[in-house]
Amino acid sequence: MKNTVEKRIRITKNGKVLRRAMGLGHFRAKKKSKEMNRKSGMRELVTEAKNIQKYASH
Image (tube, rainbow, N blue to C red; front, side):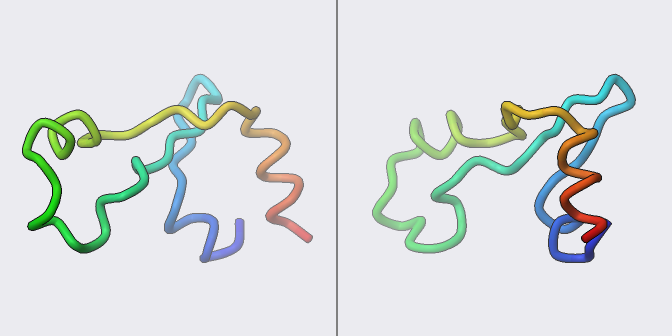
């Protein structure tokens, strides 16, 4: 896989593709703690790992 893709996603052994939640990069002071807690952790990307690996190899 390309390095840029590897940094942003993680593929589980069952083939799920996980990504970070959006909106966690900066300007955290404005955001409510409830919002930050809800966005913590990884989210599932709705696609198959096979498609991403095929795309990343080009």
